[in-house]
Length: 456
View 1 (cartoon, rainbow, N blue to C red):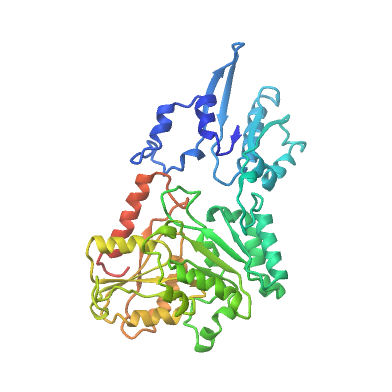
View 2: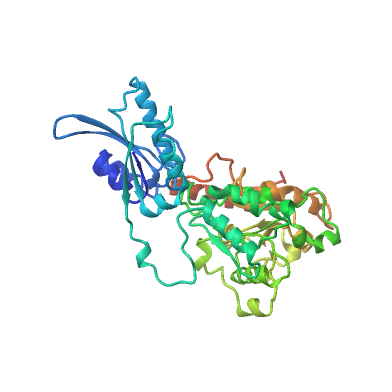
């Protein structure tokens, strides 16, 4: 069986017969897996069971686990069904596939039609599939917005917005994902159009991708917009500090812009800039849902009016208030995105006065000169740190590290230093699924960021 998220726990308990007590334990805030796995959100899990029909026959049922990429489980379940049938000498009559879809996903996801296309293909046929399509009735109850609700699609919807932006450069065209994790369903649009169409075809697009991104303990499918993959698509040279002429033309020459902002004023200015200037570039916004109502994510009216431009770097603002003056700072932590809030809270809680936190709001193109000036503001700092909440093989670390090496070589007081990493360990999945593991990892990241150690 392949079943979506709505009603999955119900099916597991009432149909498959999964033990209710074990299901409830999975939701405990201090629970981890007895198998030592990092886990996932609970409505991704599957299960198996056996039921006896009214005629006394036994029916074995298996509900396959699936990620939040809706309908992606369909071909997987079809393959499992065929394998079982082949193991029974090709008997199609004793094993069947059952799918439960929501109406929007069935209509919008191309995976459904790709799987249907296998139905009569030799070697793939399974004798038919029983499909239930549930009308979730979301559409009719929607209020009136200037926002357009697309079909539950990534590739087609994102491609549509790219085309719209090409034809009307005066429109601010934005595509927002439910979660940034799902943007990879449209990878062909990102790779072949957004990141490269200007250089290949001289087509300039001002499309904006708005992607939720942040480690909030929500598991591997609701955490990461894969920042590292977008940064890898950026065509800026990381090997050399840019010349003054190159710095002046950074945005004109870059293929894409990538921002991870912590300031409402910056969010306003980056969208205003997107339309106000006289050229167009794709803009990738990775934004934090945690910061939407966070007390640190506030801007004065003056930052909207008197500061007329987007600020790619936001320096420390607490010198002489809660931390030392710049000349007495011993550690400078650079970060991007919502991890700033965790760093700020940790510093305040532990009364650490010798550490400044600098936010890099725009990662591509990189604010080389502003980072250099910021480092020179701390002549006596002995520890330069890049802190991220992502894993070592994710996030911005691989992107910023060579840039910091080039920048440190240009500073007045830090030519002998290297930037130190503070973040999660490498991992095949982007995040753990258990809240207790998430909290443990976050505490370790904070401890690593603020410790006094030799540069690695």
